[in-house]
Image (cartoon, rainbow, N blue to C red):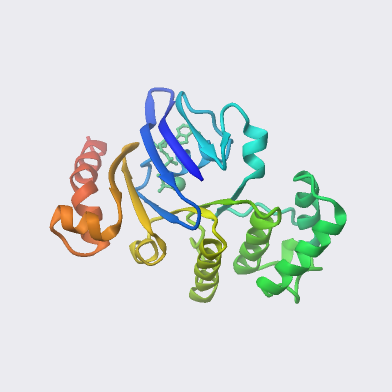
Amino acid sequence: MIEVKGLTKSFKNKVAVEDVSFSVDCGEVLGLLGPNGAGKTTTIRILATVLKPDAGTAWVAGEDVCENPAAARKKIGVLTSEVGLYERLTAREILKYFGQLHGMNMGMINDRIEEMVELLDMGDFIDLRAGTFSTGMKRKVAIARTILHDPPVILFDEPTAGLDLMAALAIYRFVHRCREEGKAVIYSTHIMGEAARLSDHLAIIDNGKIVGRGKLQTLEEKLGVSGLEQVFLRLVGEEVETSSSNSLV
Ligand SMILES: Nc1ncnc2c1ncn2[C@@H]1O[C@H](COP(=O)(O)OP(=O)(O)OP(=O)(O)O)[C@@H](O)[C@H]1O
Ligand SMILES: [Mg+2]
């Protein structure tokens, strides 16, 4: 459902993503882990057709993100921690606007909004202006916006950053639901517990390169360590130390 082949992207002389390849099937969650600046957001932005890669490409639900970005975009929902909402619009108006952008008709949009209100418990604020919302309320509107057009591929980039436990749990339930519905999911996070709990497979990225890929158990066995934190440290620990000492020079 998601196929990434040899993605490479540089900004000026900084290689952000280098020869990244992986795939995600229907009903599968790939946990994308890596230290700050590793290339996670860049990879997700390329998949979401926001950035063009210098080399390589990716397919989402059969659509080439470089050759058919408009078609690919229809198959994708993206959820990040930076929720930009039009503050003067109500949650319902925001969702209607996005539904129209996705080419949905009004009947379909209204039906989906009712489903979202129920799924995400938004009844109390669906007709209030977004400018008055708490972070958790904004995130719910963002989730609804992400899945309004029912895309088969969902990309999460640190979706729980800044959320309290209850709101984070709502996101975890949402990820489980996506998996049950057979969606292909990429979940990028810094939180090891979150990644271990939600992911079927892991891809660990460091300095733009994939340094480990597979099921947690397989990686544990290969490296002879126990737990995702140890796996992560074994795969990126040295590089983290080197790069931080370099940055002090
Ligand atoms: N628009 C940009 N212009 C210049 N450099 C960029 C740009 N976007 C990303 N980079 C650089 O590319 C590298 C990868 O950044 P990216 O945001 O993909 O990392 P990340 O893994 O998402 O990090 P974090 O965990 O901090 O979110 C970094 O060195 C970053 O400074
Ligand atoms: Mg990022």
